[in-house]
Image (cartoon, rainbow, N blue to C red; front, side, top):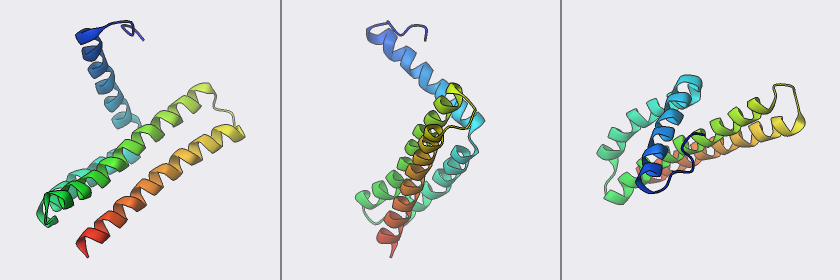
Length: 119
């Protein structure tokens, strides 16, 4: 990566551009991420309306942000595994399955948080 040896403010600026490129890539290539962004867009106003306290609102929104974070990491794992090779390999499949399991767990956790706070 160009500019990885930069220091100080230049390094921070470069990091922001790399992050934006990451968001663009995941948006373009990962339908699951787009669906979870839609979930975030729908759930955030609901959380602000339904949450009784600031902590409730933060937990409701934060649980969906957690899903987005885990999806980003899962997408990164999948991209690296696909970069290494497209042939079937037990470890490649395991890495992708574990990433997928992490996304599922974050979705289950979000559902538990929403159920606990709204019931």
